[in-house]
Image 1 (tube, helix red, strand yellow):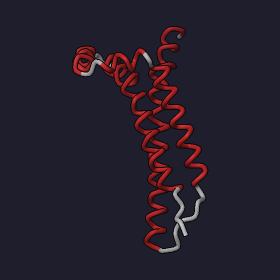
Image 2 (cartoon, helix red, strand yellow):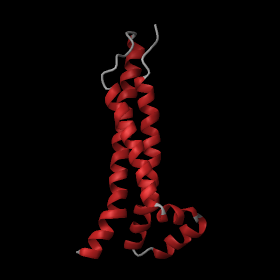
Image 3 (spheres, one colour):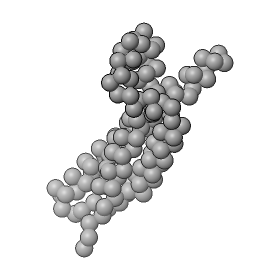
Image 4 (cartoon, helix red, strand yellow):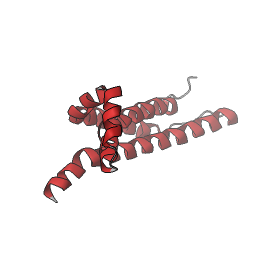
Length: 131
């Protein structure tokens, strides 16, 4: 009989979502944080070393769209696999439950990173302009 794949799938989808939502921090939150702390020189050095940051910042809507889609897909897989059966063997069952818990933590971390990046990319600039 085949073993359920939901927990492992949930881990990989959560890691992909974490990678995508980390891009939102790199494109938007990190530069805003450096500038607000008065570290503009550090930001210019960072951009000189990694010029792709400018591209990410210019295309932040696409970056956030991709990250949001990844988070939705990972969330759907998390939801679908939340009550998937684990193996009967005690060691494999413990590993299944541990993997499921880690997957949930990684997913929630991804959502938090996405929200922080979204705040710095969209809310804070709007608030500064209209506040």
